[in-house]
Image 1: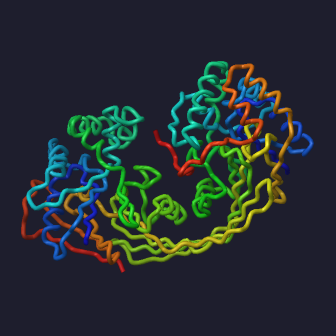
Image 2: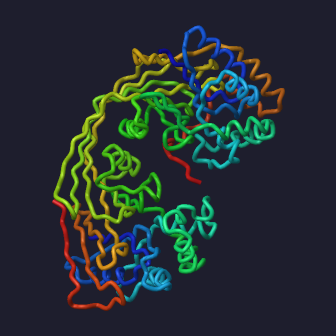
Image 3: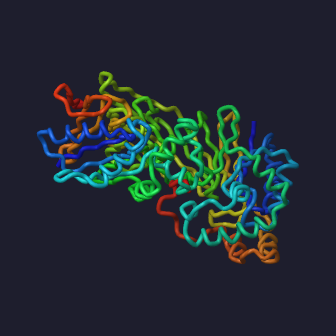
Length: 270
Length: 256
């Protein structure tokens, strides 16, 4: 069976429509969404309505959480101070724009979705704010998958799609404890995968095209999809609706253009 | 150089005094004294013991080491009770000890003392060691020999240290974790990236014991950074109305 997994739509209805049309051509039987339906983009209400009307199960993203609970993230959940400043502007605009029933819907979204041996989260199983970058230490990445009891962990949040296979993992643990004799155990872990769905509405892979993934559950095969759409329409709407023009500029470039965090795996607890 | 690493006094002044006495009797001088949180708690014999423990830590006697203290689970509960953290009303404390326990904590630690506790460290990075109450995943993270191997491995990676000393479990143990191999392949929109084969040298997590949680027996850890030598100490003391007595015994356990 083919699944489509989308993430980080960020109020970009043009991109969502283009991706949904592309999913139809791929003949995916089910669609899962990894959250961040709102924020940055000009059509948060329209995006949520479309996701609801299509009956697409969705996790709660960090932006969805912030719109429900108030802005509770600190600077360490943004890639940079500049990104934090821009994020606050986008939050204020979205917070004013959002309809009450949309806010209520976002509050109902689960942190995690599961289907058989697949698990779907926004950032990581630990937090909607944690970035699972492809450069993350392999053993730490493996821990995130094993924490879910799944074989495949789907995530978003970084806005750059990738597939990571983690194979032939072996660990040993030798325990000395006062209350028992020394023990040593070996652990082998079969193949696990992390699949990042990229971003429908705010891509950061260097091009303005929307990204998402198709996963074939029978063949365990991943296809990273890149979909062209009329991003200039969204850019114009960003400006027309009074959002900071920088969001239009970076959407057109497909880049964040800000320095990376020192420690993107850091989880904010504030 | 030898460190004494304690955790979990939990307001048990008698237990802390017993450990200090044991430290004085060691053949090798202790050069640093670390207290990995849970200074306060509900193990004191009197309501005043939490304050007395804090005074003892803040103002050590002549010739005694000044302890380096980091915050633990009980301190976080105090911060929550006193509105000094993001989580108000200490729901974790309420779940753990109920309303009477919450009241006892509220009454036994003054706001001034909570402010002092708030100024203490999150943990200590010394040489290739991290000394912390729980782990970098949080103050409530309870690492034990039964914790899944991959989780122990993750905590060591997050610690960015070869030796992770922690106190949350209250147990004394040493877990050597060897991430022996991992084959990682990343594919992006640009195609497959070079594969990576990973392995790491053995690293360990050390449970430093608990001074005050188990009445009558205090446990703590000695560590020599120069030689990586580790030993666990167990100190028996009289449970109530602590008085130094001859029959009190201390024993050591050196992990193989």
